[in-house]
Amino acid sequence: MTEQHSAAEQKIILITGASSGIGSATATHLAAQGHTVILGARRTDRLAELVDIIEENGGTAKSTFLDVTNLENVTQCVNTIVAEYGRLDVLVNNAGIMPISPLAEAKVEEWNWMIDVNIRGVLHGIAAAQAVMLKQDRGHIITLASTGAHEVVPTGAVYCATKYAAWAISEGLRIESDPSLRVTTICPGVTESELADTISDPAARETMRTYRQSALPPTAIADAIAFAVNADAHVDVSEIIVRPTTQRP
Image (cartoon, rainbow, N blue to C red; front, top):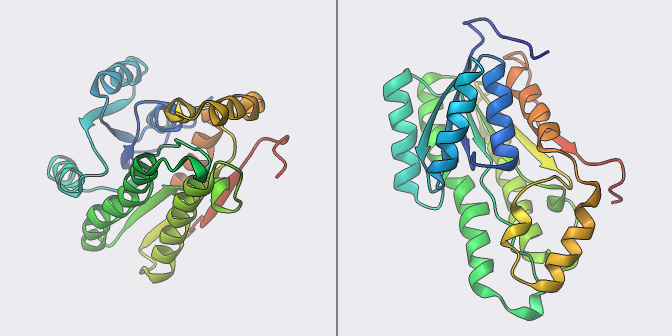
């Protein structure tokens, strides 16, 4: 049974990349706990379906088009949330892509795409949300990195680099920030998602299918995110690594 929070504990939460996978599972889980979730992604048709499901189950949700590679779009989204709800309590920097391939394939466009979404997208979210949260004197920024932030695997050099960057940016934000701003990094291991759908290299795609045979459900990561969100205000959950028991390393 999902625990419901009192009105004083209910938070306004923006989740990027909310149209599938971890983002979708997190939105559903947090809404079931009584939080108001704003779902951001480019696939607005999927967001609309998810909002309907959340509302049918008694939750509160809203969807918005969000391209994390566009700073103006991210800033406008945050400002709209503040104008409507009076505040933004939590940003979940979840949007990410994983078109892995050997470096020898020189898939430069895919490398740049990962840099734009996985790094610039995180920075844009921080830039937009941090300004609001500093004015509020409270807030929480959660960034999804990966176990790839702590290890490099074949075909994953650029992806792991972007996730290490996300980890480093999040840790840097935590170190620099006033205690009123909580900062959390979540590092999922192998998790069921649509990330592998972006892999264009046939060999890498087949390797990833095998690698994901014992993947965690996205709800396992949603549980970790919810734990950080619901921690007492004086508790800063700095980092959580969640991986299948079979993932070695």
